[in-house]
Length: 238
Image (cartoon, rainbow, N blue to C red):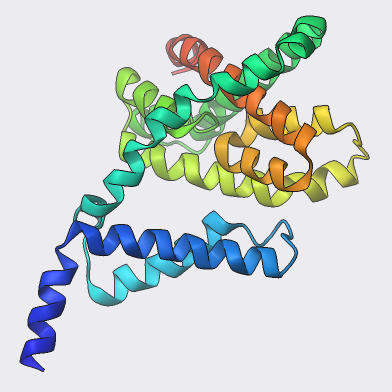
């Protein structure tokens, strides 16, 4: 038992352990989702969290120790954000012919996402620091963390809210769009890209390639617009 305890003591502090655990959890969750037919509720990110969280709790592993390994995946968010330029370039002709509808939908979605978050947080009496943390929740994680830090929020809390927003959007987008009888894949994809960033975009690609492409466009444009409007909304509403 002493040898096992020593081995676990070493493994629990090794960055490679939690990096491997994170990747394996996601692969297992993704395989399960595919086996189930990729239903909206079987989101791989959500299932990965449900797999990893009990392990961290059961082993008494602090988040800081876990992040020592997960930071390698976190680093890839930067290049992934830069790669958002690809769907913009690939669909440049479509964007050029639909500039006005895209801009109107983008502005409406971005302002409502950030403004409603701020107003709801104020309505519930949250302190200013938490309000500032929730404001950029609907944009992709690297951008949201930068905005949160710039306006005086808590980036760690913003990261949690961004993930929750993405998961909720990915789980609810298909049944919600079906309920509203919105059949245009461009509209469906653009909506989830604005509201649920990368996790929602991944879901859109699972459902339909056109929806995925438009979700990627929306996510990229929303990241840019949110970084501009959140500081303004914060000054005005907070």
